[in-house]
Amino acid sequence: MSSDGAMAAKARAMFGERLNADAYAALLQKKSLAEIVAYLKTNTLYRHALEGVNEKAIHRGQLEVLLRRSMYERLQKLLRYGSDADGRFLVAAVMTTEIEMILRCIRVLMNPESDERAEMIAEMPMYISHYMSFDIGKLAEITSYDDLLAFLKNTRYYDILRRYRKDNLMEIDAVSLEHDLRDAYYQHMIVLANSDTRGDERQQVLKLVSMRAELEAVSIIYRLKKYFQAAPAVIERTVVIRSCLFKEAEIRRMIKEDTADEVLAALQRKYHFYTKGANPQNIDRYIEKIVYNIYYTMIETDTRSNLILLSYMNLSQIEIHNVINICEGVRYHISNDRIRALLVY
Image (cartoon, rainbow, N blue to C red; front, side):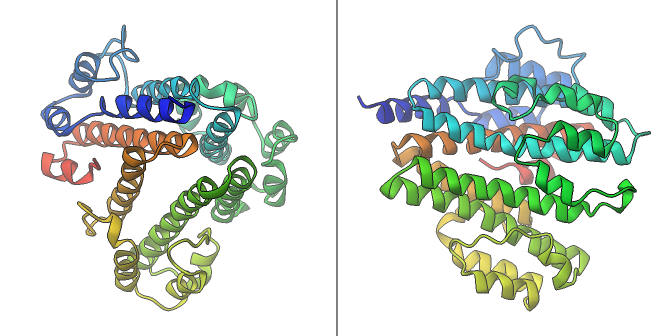
């Protein structure tokens, strides 16, 4: 069996251990975080990650860290069947976590009296520190924006962050900063696809990257129009425009002319092939279901290692999001029907 075929077989076997409808039904019956953790410890693929954990002492943030660590350990197992290029795709995917941590650090600097610093430290993803472009543990030592700039001096983030420096932190345009960081992520993924893949595999990876960016853009456009009646200029500086099934002109027309309902209708038309089981009443879950269907099809039908790796990673992230939604629902006494509507599988 080729290395690609071996990785695909291993990924499908691991994907077969995912939480199924019965597992989600059981989790929805739990009345506390402790009960949820106890179930995950004894009945699911997360049992090894949660071994020895005191379910009565763990909090939601710690649980999420352990679940994500479990995911990366499984991805590392897949990489044994891959190449150096596959490893570089995983490193690139870690960029999203790096960006989240940088933005979180800036929020801590803006709100020094909040509990965010303690939460950031407790939830730092140290399990992927060897994949990251900076020493994540040292983020906890940052006390000013200039400290952050010096810390990230030799990373791809420095030039972007430097452009947004203000003497008064509260004057930083956080929306545009996040936009530029997200754009840098997609640019890096495209560069990587062009350099490390060939032929049809390259086209498929580029399509997946562009499709994910496009769906993210449409989601933001819809929410800003639906809930905030945002002006086109505000939307434009928020959205990273990368076209895939849409033409760029169509996305720009959405921003400038379309209503929220017209944006949703356009999304349904373009992505109708991937909307099985998707409920358009909740735009975030609707798009997450589209993403799930895209990667589910990929992991079931493809054998190319980069595509398998990206698919398994994204499907695993959606599953973790489901578990966290259940935890939050239980915490805030949300009805099972409402929690169930948030789940994507």
